Length: 113
Length: 111
Image (cartoon, rainbow over all chains, first blue to last red; front, side, top):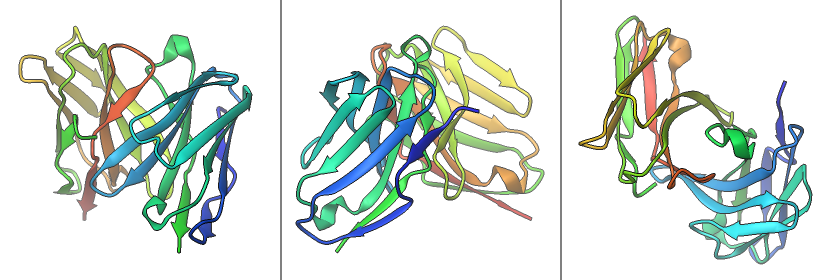
């Protein structure tokens, strides 16, 4: 059974903290994605990676960075968390030859106070 | 999701048909998709349609594509309480790896 896991389901952090969100997939997929989901706005792409050490900005990269040191792991970093980054964060992966299907993790609900 | 639009809510009675609508903007999209998000879970691919098709049927699901109007719809026949979820349409960007998602439609099925 294919699986994308995220390190935390719920996270509460203070303004200014550095926050790491981890995502691991066991499908040997080259592509990995980070989205944020907000009511009425749908999913917005933050960053994606198409290979180890490769990354590309999505639609809303400001305030975020990413790291892909291993194929199975894709990390999202909030360098200095702010209250407007309170959101649901979803990780996904896909195979480049079957890029019509993205597999999603369960999400991390991040609250920044 | 500013380029892919959906209505936010839909309420139907159990056993009725549900129709969820979506308008998209990228005429070069190779595939168009419907994803389902159940409460507390990530998104799961429900079905997809290739851009050269007008219709696709998969058990209780029917996808209709009107390329002229850039309109996509998902019909769920005999809607059940287990169909209550958020449904997202999505389009591929220029046929590449990235998807643009709609705002999502919250489907509520009432007894």
